[in-house]
Length: 456
Image 1 (cartoon, one colour):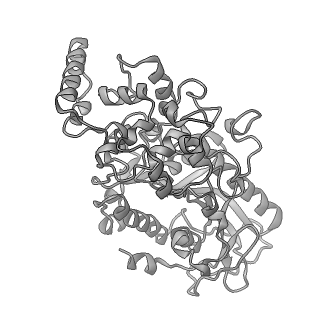
Image 2 (image 1 turned 60 degrees about the horizontal axis):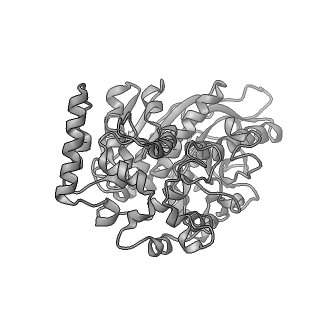
């Protein structure tokens, strides 16, 4: 794992997360057999102490946050909800956002340690190499990044179910529209790539003319983007916070005005490191132009270029450094090249993570499909078309419903050791139980899909 070596951002860091362990309801022991795993990254709070590893009793009201991972664990899979580095047990260290290596480094060591611990502690419970990876929003981006990391391990892992929901995977192009989206004329940035250099130049001149004519503004400034505090998280993550980023110590995404190390109110990195709430961050953003937080060289490029970070002949040296980091963390190429099924769930009306992030992927790779095109009953009940938050429940319900179907995603295989006695039933009916443990919550393997269905 390249991110764990000496001198890398993850070296010496503490990975933590929530583990949901399937327990046989008849003897309160780990389920006997070969068990699959679900990796379930979720959106990360700006407060490092609201990490999923902080959940130690579902009865205290945390059920809503952990409901969907609880469902996958209840189907009979070990389920891990990783904390992002800088949260939970690692709260004293740097936090990042939309940096794929950070999501990978936050998850893979936990997964490998779980395999090791089960091998040491249990004779008749085996965690095999079947793995499902599920996420939505920031968790969807993390799911794609983690899938890539599993492939990098190249150790015989079998992807049973990979689900990427509403994910900003096109960090170098489509998702930059949340910063550079213009009122009325941004359609010019979506023009197909031209073959003629003269056409390129004419289009560039036209775009700048329209920009001046209509005096358009950034989405963060005109109020058309619903989550303006995300810009602070991006500005911090892409401003010399991880030594492995392409733009570290070269060009910061944030403007110098908001990287003032002597004034925490003017240092976007301090906002994130101190775990400020979204409400507080919103109050600290420059007004009336929130976009003032962005490096003016980079902002100018995003506003003027229909290429964004893709082969732009007008890109400055300063912008090149940022674009190198954006391209490094772009997962579009990975999803276009996977050779196992990946299910995408993305509303065409998503106003936070634009549908254009994934629109061309299914047509480019036969292994990827939209959830409404799945060859199962799930496609008959799931068709996301609302806002980002409205579609969250539909996508997550669709994902966990997939666990109700038989198959490798959750099948408990008989143990190879004949001395082990299988005491579980295929479809137990008892209600799930939880107990507090130092490293995990444990749940009985019973199906709770009626809960999910009730949320549709």
